[in-house]
Length: 172
Image (cartoon, rainbow, N blue to C red; front, side, top):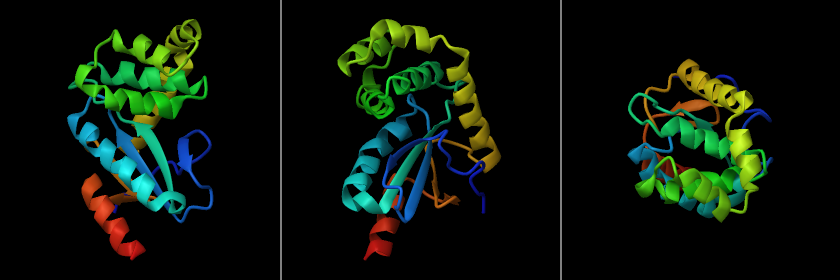
């Protein structure tokens, strides 16, 4: 079985309870249609299992196939510097059908970011490094496509729907 490398740390974007018994890490690409399909299911998992779950998103932009994946990851990270990573994360998936290079500033305004700061941060080397580190972590963890899920550090063999069913069964 492939295991998650490195383990979840405070470098990650973490949503949920520290005491959660289940840690889910998604490697995703904001332009990937399968990730787009998984997004509402992940939302449902978060609502259904609430405090039992800690959810982490790591960037795995398939830049060769998706030219906007890396810029979208940059937008999410730049939003994160203003404390709004998850708001941008959600906005990117909810607007995936109209993803363009011009969309990022519009979404930044919509979620209430300081636009000038956002644009400045988007150009920073640190953000690119963070995304590359996430990608590298995916490669080292055995990710071969998006979305890929890891549950409590072990690669989950299946998509978001399978994940939901598995959690449902183990919760029952």
